[in-house]
Amino acid sequence: MRDFHLPGRSAAYGTNGMAATSMPQATLAALDILRAGGNAMDAAIAACAVQCVIEPASTGIGGDNFCLYVPAGSSKVIAMNGSGRAPAAATPEALRAAGMTAMVNTSAHSVTVPGAVSAWEALNKAHGRLGLDRIVQAAIAYAEEGFAISPRVASDWEGSVGKLMKHPASARRFLRDGEAPALGTRFTQPELAKTLRAIAAKGKKAFYEGEVAADIVATLRAAGGLHTEEDFARGADVAEFVEPISIKWRGMEVFQCPPNGVGMHVLQILGTLGNLETPAGGPGSALRYHRHIEAARFAYRDRDAFLADPSQVDVPVEKLLSPDYLKRLAAAIRDDVAMTEAELPGPGESDLKKHKDTVYLCVVDKDGNACSFINSLFEGFGSGILAEKAGVMLQNRGFGFRLQEGHVNCIAPNKRPLHTIIPGMVMKDGQAIMPYGVMGGRFQPTGQSLFLTNHFEFGMDVQEAIDFPRLMPQDGKVQIENGIPGSVVDQLNRLGHECELIDKPHGGGQAIFIDREKGCLVGGSDPRKDGCALGY
Image (cartoon, rainbow, N blue to C red; front, side):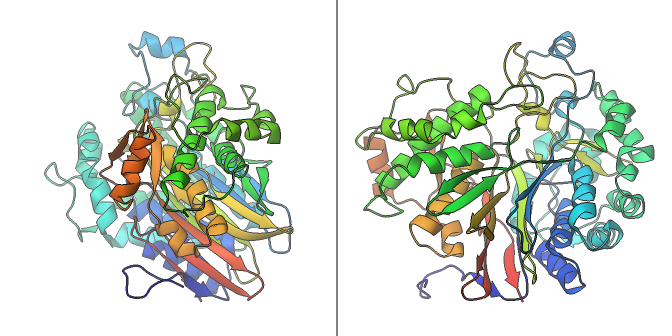
């Protein structure tokens, strides 16, 4: 039980259904769908569609989607990979001929064909009860009638002004006299509303074919892209159900989507730390944070060496998650000193340096269907390239590619890039007990493993586990939130870590714990975002 004298909020409780998202309007949209007879999948898509309107820096229909879903009464975790592919003409030679020596986050070459709408339709048809025509109505209303810009959204918007200024159409739509709209401004997106209405009427074909696809392709071609309408027609079927990966941990099984996403690195961190005793000093101790940093450094090292599109590259998932390998990683961690960069074997830190923008949400309905759902443009406002007539902001997932020949993540025709967005699911005794996720680009494996250990190892409730101060290894340093006490930071520095404070906090998260013994749902939503968890 939390100390009610201190700032903070309680976890949300419910019995008939619950949604946890990064925006109150999205949470309400999900609950409205549940009360109208929809299930957790319908509600998740409805909430995400709303976020695609009211969190335009973080997500959109021009982005990608991943999902983990456990149907009520089932022990099977269903995984969806809704990440898009590079155009058929995208080769390192073609990009070098265009004058590129590395991927550029605001270039049309960083735009892969969006996979979100393809995934929404596939998930809805396979596991939903209501049609897309009903599910996206709340999003359409916010796009047509407007929404009030909330604090975290306003902050993210302000941080993207420079990017939006690079593209005249984006500046016209999303800036006012060269500045982000002020906090509380009522903002509409009529062009996006029209596209959402078309999707409601015709499904994914309205996005991947016809005038919407033509506008997107024309916009990208004008910006130097290699995209064709044929690429988009193929993109309608890019979403695919895949076999999830998992690891046994503390009497439970933690599930993730397989590569090209970074979910396996959550499992690596958990598996590594699971070979070590729980630190006696507790979750806020320097030793706890130190071990977590070291385990994360190993995972990110392996990410940069191995993670890529498994349809084009062999990704050794089984080896990287094997008990023997994880034991060896744990044995390499010293409690008295941090490894130097020279001592850290294998590749160095990633060149994907900045935090990314994403939305994560989860929903559990009265029947017990559990949905873990994530949708993203990658960086703030993605590439910054707006298909103006369609109102579609385009992601920059292709920024995750490399141009080095022979690298596992080198760009290639119809290839998926390394992907950072990862929904999570915890199972116990063959039943779902927690859909969860933590946003924040490269931070996500660290963030998810911090959250899970906070809750299941250190005994915090769902909300406390989300709230707890965070850190992350990055570029040879450790990025520290200001909630970590100075004395702990000093101890980490003495161990050999180079700690630095960050301007914005690490990511944001949501989770719903399914307490089967008590018959209730317990939800949490991150105060680092604007959202909430609500049950009924």
